[in-house]
Image 1 (cartoon, rainbow, N blue to C red):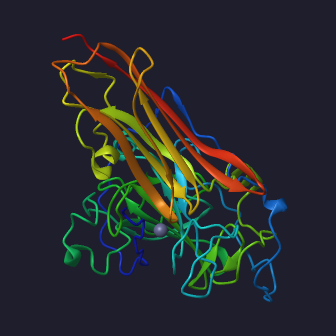
Image 2 (image 1 turned 90 degrees about the horizontal axis):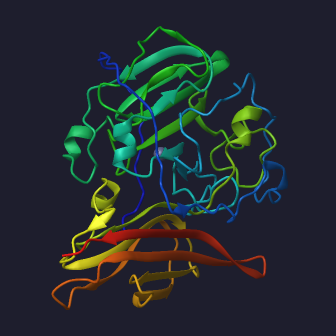
Length: 375
Ligand SMILES: [Zn+2]
């Protein structure tokens, strides 16, 4: 499984900006599946006590009140894939003592579920008022897996904007879409002003906004208001505005997508918008149902089932997961063994169950159907 482990650099020297106007709207209608946000969803106030004592005076001087830096419904249209790593050891933890981070991660990754969402255009917005310090644009939107490492060396942040706020505070917005950066150094911005669009530039494998907050150059976790490495559980001085905090419930695990296809799917292809068919031909060589989930954990039980129009189960799978993964792509299917498939509606269901607090809960549920056409 691919590891969501992009490295994000600071904006070193700003390149001249290329500005562009893009139309932007995010319309994601995904019939027949729902993200259940029951797993580890919690309010800031109910978090566990500190695991590492924070001794600094708090809140940090002049901390800005932050608005959400991306124009999508977090937890539905986009997801926080990785938080700041608050664990000082080579291990990692997010601010809530969960596993949505990786060692040394210095920002908050707001990810889009797939490339079609990126192509629709999702706006990146200034989180707080300030002055643009640096911008970079012109880097291509390609996965780091397909890029020449030399082409991103020293430019890991990709197309990016850095904003200087009062009293040594700075925010940076990385991996933006080529040609989308719409601000210039020296320009004043207000919270909510458009900076550009979410992209796939620099050191990244999936379209996302890496949002970094710094005070006097040191990375700060906006969910705690504390510098990196101070342990989890203390959110008393989170930097989010009340409005932003109310939209940023912690979602440990969620459904990125699911769909039907007639060929063995690769995760990257599905995330690029392929393998999502509403109909399949009667002579399709395969009928396959795939699911893409983020934040799976060791011990989770995953179940998948594919049924024919008459209710016959064509394929099913149950698996106890043996590791914790940032994202997990799975599929089941059946090969055509007759001249054609019986036409009609084929259905598939997915559940991910987790044992927590002494009981088993379904933390992700997906379902989908496809029409197989008569031959
Ligand atoms: Zn990141």
